[in-house]
Length: 346
Image 1: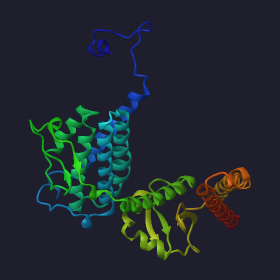
Image 2: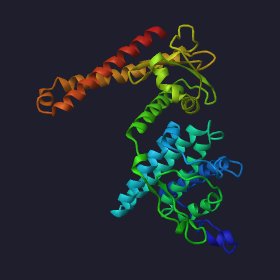
Image 3: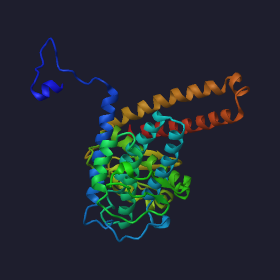
Image 4: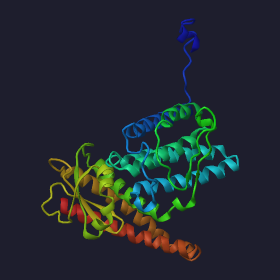
């Protein structure tokens, strides 16, 4: 490869140019690209004119939005998990933690959640600046050249510290490799916040599934119909749901006159989405419901078979049997709902 790129050699049929055929190298390249693009977006929002560029007061937990609290909680867990993995020389585990933190938590959920508000929210900009700094430090032992290059730009962007998140400055030539390992107070780790955000993730995934099943255009803004209880729960999450699920309007539960209404389950609530297309393809909706009914029928049959087997109900731990019964009730309820929806479409 060097000979060809330098002009000192030429690929021939007898001696073809060597190519990378390792999927692991491809995965590593994709990971570095993800970090590079995410960092460019973040630093673009934290430029010289950003409110996070010095002077912003240190954010307190009660002042932060749900995505910010969630991201700091996930960061705190990742730092603890990385410390434990490094202490036990589990380097493969370190790579898994790094992947989950950057790709899933930081890129897929946090950055997407704050896009509508980051430009005007000074505290959010401060959290983003500190979080990216911590992420680079955690990734530095794995991809030092990429993280060092990104940090060269990030270090020029000043911001207030997040209380309880220690990010000591580099000790030599402003190099990331001489900066301290991040440390975070456990008070930022919150099961409650993570569970609350998990409910948002569930709703977003459910709406995305419906959009995919109905082949809704990615840029189309749909309408989400919610009941009073769900509306109260989503009060602090409205912008997140709109941004991540392509929702334009959140309306009341009355969908009698709504165009292209499709139902969905959100925990114990039945919600609807409408305005999925200019004209609803009733045939496609029937096909979807028929597939769902077929899958639920198979699941129900399997659960009934398990519960009718004395070898299972008498010998298995009681909590497993109870869990199976609850699962059977949920599948039966979902099946009844799907059958009812099919009748309304027909």
